[in-house]
Length: 327
Image (cartoon, rainbow, N blue to C red; front, side, top):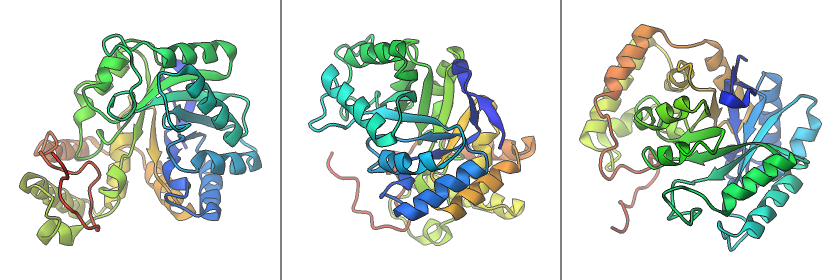
């Protein structure tokens, strides 16, 4: 597994890393998660990301990682715990850190991120949304000085709110999800340039769009998925046609597309089993896509440069869809 520098942290991280959501009860039973984690490390993964919001992911890692005789760079987050969660209460935030340390069975955390700092409707982190100061920033700085954490970061999902927070220069790493993949490129406009300008480490989450790019859905693209807009449907047909030309599976092309960007330090795979870990790492081992393939993929992405109105955030392929919900 190749390693890349995580921005100004100087940490050397595996270019393909393990995301913690699906090694929790959300995606795996414990023994499957255990095998997935152990196999990932055996194949060269040295970075794992988790969060309090990923069900029992921290607890699973705390049970499995002591069995592994290899250095692991570990990140977790602040957000959602304890309940009621009070994001502007320092004592509440400190209890979350202490619980993470307990569950992970660690004395320190390599990278602590603020979870969804860019969605005040989810977590109201900022007393002042213009300069993004507050108790969480002060606590992170104190924890860093005390050696309880090594580096700080932001883990979010917006394309235009997140860059405002990045530009404060207060954080070392950004994890951006759902907005940098084969067909979703919104992060290219502001998130990635802002992070690069500041020398921040860049981590990509959900390169397979939480399953939308994990496999093909030919039947639904042709005559199902009522939530799918006409432009997106045409785009998927073009993508699938190109895959037929290449003779490559969709998941491979999707992973290797992200890995082809040298500015991305690492990409999180949402593998939930040993088999998925092995497949993803095999894809990554084939290296970047050729410039000709990348040009064709750019052309396909440009067919729908921004999310169509009403497109679900997580594409409900293979699942019932009840409409967009309340206005």
